[in-house]
Amino acid sequence: MDARCREYEQAVEMEAQMSEELRRHAESCPRCCALSAAASLTSAPVVPAAGDPFVQAMGALARQTVAQRMARGERARRLLPLLIGLLGWSVGGGSFVLVARASLPGPPQPDYTSALPSLPAPAPAQVVAVLVICTVWTLLMVRRLGRPSEMRTTA
Amino acid sequence: MRDAERDFRLAARALEGDAEAAAALVEGAVPVVRGLARRLAGNEEEGDALAQATVVRGLERLGKYRGEATFATWLCGIAVHLQAELRRRAAREARAQAQIPAPPCPPDPAKVVSDTETTRLLWSFVSRLSPAQQEALTARVVAGSVAEGAVSLGLTTHVFRSRLHRARLALRDLLLTHCPELLKELGYGR
Image (cartoon, rainbow over the protein chains, first blue to last red):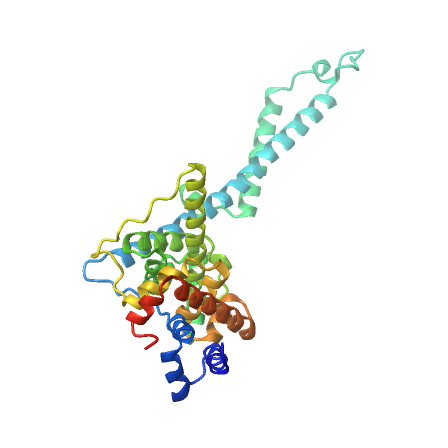
């Protein structure tokens, strides 16, 4: 590789304007010819021909992907308050029943190895009260965490 | 407004759920991505499949698009990686079957990308370069300038220029090794 080749490589690297002398050198030197070819790499965009639906199909794919992503996000948003509401039902209901049972008079000698069976069964009014409180709890959680619009309209 | 800025705004709207913005973003980038994908794959059918896979992956990763380059340039980077992935997978499958990969079928003249012989030849060798070199070359080709190509890959101009030059030298060596005669036929080396 001579000085001209190095000069040519440098010019290609810097994408500098080629002098006439360097251009002539590239025509006679295979290494520089090949480098010149390598530097001339191009890629023209594909102009869609008439009736070629590719671009529209890709646009439709993009619309569909965005719609699916939004639906996924909406499902997640809907699921979260419902899960929290369900948790509220379990925790609130369970605590209330335990407290209600414990506050009633129990048998004279409770069985300490198993506390629950020794407690009296709750009255129907207590069960209704638990249901009402848990429903209010769930509604509050759902409202607080933001219900999706379609739930609001269908509820 | 710069194209990259416009694309970034469209991408932000698409991420907020604007389907029309997503469609506009993709439809604007597809001709460039399709052109590159066809050249990387070597024929129209595989190129279009690669372009489609690129768009799908680009939409999946839309949140990672930072608007440093145009959306088309960003997608072209994905296309290069996908093509490299496809080649690796094909090579793995061929090794697993302990078979010598069959020579590629002669391309259907009607389906070959309508490039000049030089361009077609050059692209056929680009796929033999390392992914980093392919990325540098395609970024330069698609972005249109060294500065934009560097931005699109998140590199400094100096590093990008150096990587691009190494890629061009590697491409030159491939041309010299594999088709010196063809170079002469194409008018080089006279």
